[in-house]
Length: 46
Image 1: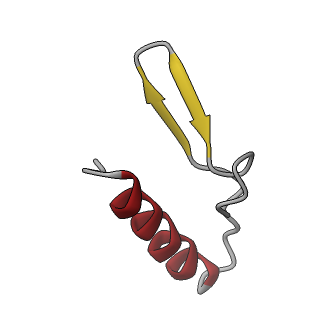
Image 2 (image 1 turned 120 degrees about the vertical axis):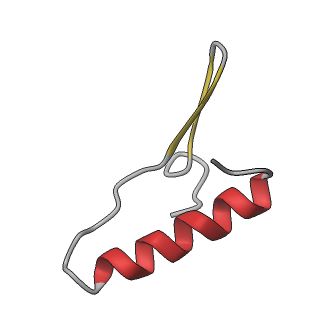
């Protein structure tokens, strides 16, 4: 689990880079907190 927004962004970018090596494309990363959902794709972070 990510401790902060910056660490979550770094983790997502690291996973995205690793998955590219095996031809897997990350389409989105959703962060769910209570009733709120945040999409990295919608925020332009992917």
